Image 1 (cartoon, rainbow, N blue to C red):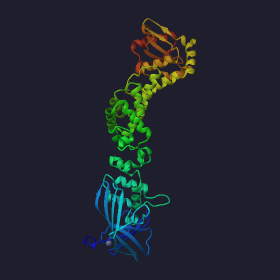
Image 2: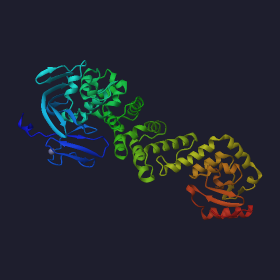
Image 3: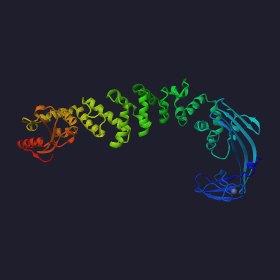
Image 4: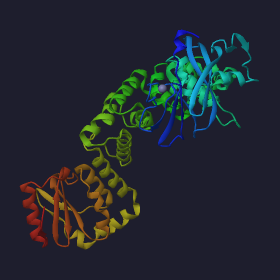
Length: 479
Ligand SMILES: [Zn+2]
């Protein structure tokens, strides 16, 4: 026995996973009760080398434990030694003795494993997992063992292997030994290694679950995905590789160029997430292609930063969709959007939407026409040299008025049709077709007199409204 092992101590503890107290029996001879809040350390000698004995204290139990030492490890190879010991629990006493010396040389590159027990090679192939499972037996959970032989780079690969191949139906427990042996036999192991080494270790199950990335004939990760090399960092960020996602990224690259995609990704990484960017590629492409948003850096800053800081819209997806819908509706209505990057996106959108809905509704338009053509409406029109008050001809007049003056008069269509109110336009007689001020009349009261962006009427305009009100028997109630 080496000096290092001369003073070796071990303890065995008993207790169910969620039980409050555990019984802790140390090879120093002491035993104690340890609560769930306390560390598993011998209260007599401070020994913290403890393995689990089972749910309940038993009169007698024999356990196998191992002390592992890693002799050598690289990203594709490891050489692991194990000192196996037999641990006995009897009448609340723990004793142990060293039983076997093991050695495992495992090579991902050569796809080989060589296992030795007490200096003699023993079988560890697909036909017999007995020895290799015995080798990895050590009284702790097996995933604690992985860091002993894994490098920083390949640890995610080994973890994936353990979870994926540790048990196959009808096996019920994951075992590291057979997982490693099975992995060596998988034809796609080099492919998994390739992605693990390219920094996709955390995403191996997503890659594994998507057949094209496993069976592709290409040998470089970006070629396998079918994207330019710079996009690997974007894919690593988002961690999912569905066909739709890849297709969108390819399209974006083609359309705006790699440099622009990189700039956008950086902005989104800083302000929200790259995943957010990927989720709104469709909107970005539409804005770029159909609505002239060619300055993608400006667009990204607007969607990911500006609307968040200045308008409280924290989701870039909501921002992109709202902007897209806004310009789409403006386009459908034949109106040029007032601002390319609206200072109040939500409001601009909502106004456009009201206008749009009003326009869409042809039936409403016909009713509107009939109402405004009626005598009670026409009798309110009034014309002088400088100003005139005219009635809308139909709902598209309201839409026009609402979008040129940036207010939501179009939302009054329903009220006008139902004759709950009348909307009239104050115009300059010389420019009778140009929206200026909108007037709302309810009963015989003038309720609102509003210009661009809901501005109040100027003194001159108001004088004319007063004159008109007097002539028509209306009351200027508020304005
Ligand atoms: Zn002790």
